[in-house]
Every structure is written in C-alpha cells, then in structure tokens.
Amino acid sequence: MQFDDILKTVGEFGKYQKTKYFLICLFGILTAFQALVSVFSLNTPEHSLRPTTNIFIDVHWLTLCSTVQTPGNLSPPEHLQLIEKYIPTDESGKFSKCEIFNSEGNKTECDRWVYDQTELKSTVVTDLNLVCGNTFKATASSSMFMFGNLAGSFLSGLVSDLSLSGEKEDLTDKYYGSAVSSIAMSFAPEYYSFTILRFFCGAFNMSLFLTGFVLGMEMIGPQHRLFVGIVIEFFWAIGFLLLIAIGYAIRIWKYIQLAISLPTLLFISYYWLLPESARWLLVKGRNAEAEQVIVNVAKTNGKVVPTDILSKLEEPKRAEKLKALKRAPRLLCRTLVVLFNWFVIAMTYYGLSLNSGNLPGSLYVNLTISAVAEVIGYSLCFLCFVSGRKAMHVVAMIIGGLAIISSVPVLYLFQGSESQKNTIFVVLNNIGKVGVTIGFAVIYFWSAEIFPTMLRNSLMGISSTFARVGSIFAPVIADLAKLVPSKYSSVLPPLIFGIFTISAGLLSLILPETTDKVLPETIAEANVFPREIRK
Image (tube, rainbow, N blue to C red):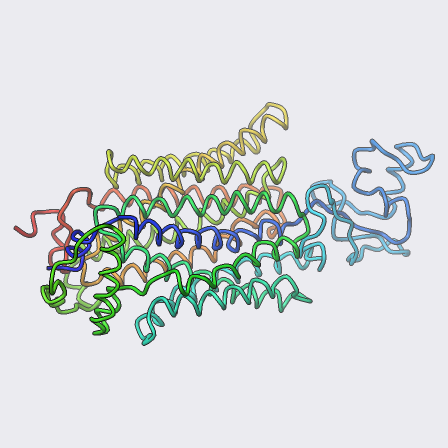
C-alpha cells in the first residue's frame, strides 16, 4: 500500500482537504500582490525636464508640446520658441527628456523633472528620479525581486529537506520573513534599502508559496491534483485584480505597498489552522503523529480508518541520482525541453505582465485586461481533461507566440488611427498572455507526470529554478524600449517574447502525452514512456 492508497481510504478531497486547501490558496493572492506590485511602485509616468530658468516651462511643460494650453499671454509660436530656447531635441526630433541648454547655450544633463500624476501620484521612480541615466535602477530593482525568487526557490527545497521541525514550521518562519520584508519596504528611505528588501521579499514570497503548495498537494489524492493545481492559479489572478483595485484607490506607492503587506499579519493564525504533512512525518519516522493527522482527516471526511493502516505501507524504492539521466538519452532530451519551456514561459509571462503598465492607453484598463486574460487562460486549462496536456500546451504556446509577434508590424505598418493601432496592439499582447498563461499552468503538472517518481522532486526543483532565471530576464526585456535609445527599440520585447514562445511550443511536440497513462516510477520506465511499463 502506498500513501495515496491511504488517501483513497480516508477521502482524497473531502471536507478536510477542501478547507485546508482553501486556506493555502489564499497564499496565491499574497504572492501575486508582491510579485506584480512593481507595475505601480516602479512605474515610470510620462515626464519631462523641469528647467528652473523659466516658470512658464516649469509649470506647463506637460501640455506645451500640443500647444493646447499656453502660459500668460504667449501665443503658441512664441511659446514654442521659448521651449526651443531651453530644451534640445533628440535624434527622433522630439524634445529631450534628459538634456537642457545651459545659460551658455551648451547641452547639459538635467537633474529635475516634472511627472504626470494623472494615474499615479507617487512611484519609486518619481520619488528618486530614476529616469534618463538612472533608468536601469528601476529595472534592476524589478529583477532583484526575481533574483530573490530564485534564491527562495533553491533554499525552499534545501531547508525543507534538512528541517527537523516540519513543513508547517517552515511555512510559519517564511511567513514572518515575508511579512517583515514587505512591510519594511513601505518605509525604505532610499534606493538601495528598497532594492535589498525587494530581494528578501522575493525570496520569502517564493518559499512561502512553494512550501504552502507542497503542503496542500500532499494531503490531496491523485485523482484531484490536476483540478486543484489549476484552481490555485485562479487565486493568483484574484490577487492581480485586487492589486489593481488597491492601486486605483490609493495611487501612492508607499501606501499601496503597505496596504498589500499588512494583511499578511492575519496569517499568523495558520500556525494553528494548518496541519503538519502526514507524508513528511512518515518520512521522518514520526509515525504516531502521522497517524493522528490521518485520523483527523478521516473523522472530518466521515470515513473510518482501518486498523494498523500504516503498517501496510510499502517501503520506499531505492532513490536514483540525477547523473543516471546520461544513461537515458530520450528522458534527458525531454528534460531539456521541459526546462526550456519553464524558462521561456516564466520570462514571457512576467515580461507581459510587467509590461502591461507600458502599453498605450490607461494603466488601469490595461492591467485589468491582462488580469482577465489570465482568468480566461486558467479557465481554458480545464480543456486538458478532454484534449490532453500536449495538444493544449503546444497550441496555446504557438498561438500566443504568433499573437505577440503580430503586434510588431502593428507598431509601424498599420495605417489606421492611433487609437485603433493601440487597441489592436493591446488585444494581440493579451491573446499572447492567454496562451502563455495556459502554458504556465499546463507545464507544471505535465512535467511532473513526465518525470519519474524517483527524480520527480529533484527535477521539479530544477525546473522551478530555470523558471526563476527566466523571470530575472523578464523586466530587462520588457524595459528594452526604455533602456535602448532607438526608435525601433519598442519592437524588441514582443519580438523576443514571441520567438521564444513559439520555439518552446514547437519543441514540446517531442514530449509524450501523459493523460490517463500509467506514470513512470524509475528512470528506465521514463525513458520508454508512454509504452506499457508495468502490468
């Protein structure tokens, strides 16, 4: 008898699991808050130079270029001449945002700007003037959160394996770290403390989600894991939507950060509400405690626990090592394709999500559309029960990648109005977001089914690490239009995201379908999967 057989006896997804899993799903909301809050905190609003030599330019600059409003009694031509006296033009013919003419008529760097406060009253960028020569600092802060995710993903598994206190205790420790770092970020006095806190918040945030997810999945039977694996993604989307609502209501980054961080204090109750993992207790030889957890599950689910059920458990099979993959070339090739998919999907997903604030049109409308695209993507994942994993993943990735690339010619070849061009561009980006969202959800449980039981945890950990590396690149690629001084730089993000997404989808054609298949337990079985491997 295996532990999953015990779950079939006491209830695979009864009242007990539903209640506890709902509590764990709430972590999805918190992690979405912290992972995506940079669309507000590190947002770069429209801005321009703030010369101190002329009060008219200082006060009215944001409306001067359209000559709709002019200061004093100046006519539009006189007004334009006044601007040209103090503001040089860049290579594209637009007024510079980084240089100014000094009193001797020479160009010099500006150190004062005026920012558009229509949508956000304050961001880290506007408070610290992270524009022009300091633009890279905002991108670095965003990437630092992803570096934290990478560290958290790596350390989460290591700490859990070495822990003597249990997964629930680990969850509590990571919760405290997440709460302290995220709240402290609201009071960060300068750039470097803010960026360091973002690293720690990213590390604790990822560890918290992974530990909670594992704790939840370990109490649920195999027949329901696909369903609940998709359900938790909806809570992430709910967190995204709530974040947008909070950002819309508050509009000052410090208070937004505080508003999404203070609710973490409520989760201190989880120390008493969540149980320890029975699987972990058994691995550590704490059978009496494991049996008590199983009895509680059965009692809540209205089931009866057979006598001496733990004594019937099979001894675990001998562990296999990663280096044994070199003797299984087909599995090794499949593993590399899976790792590439994790890297690309994370890079593109976070790139599109963080780039939502840079799309033309209203910040809040674009973010809401992006969040709704996620909900649509997660909903379509239920088609996996009909189409299977492979068809769903490949089609979603290719269509998503084609949609992202199709937005490139819209920028330069579309002959309609600016409003029509912006609408088509946003629609294509969000079709791409739907495809990548489906890919993110499917690759998680699909790769877990491809990997053999003996190496599943190790390979899933490596996959998660590749995803974190991809997410580190996401802010850099999304901000290329700001980092690369060229009129064609705006095509780089969709071009890179689209090409990589299509490539990942096409490579996935070599992966096996796992739906309704007997899953491999050893490397040898996984290398010939999906043949009939066991009778």
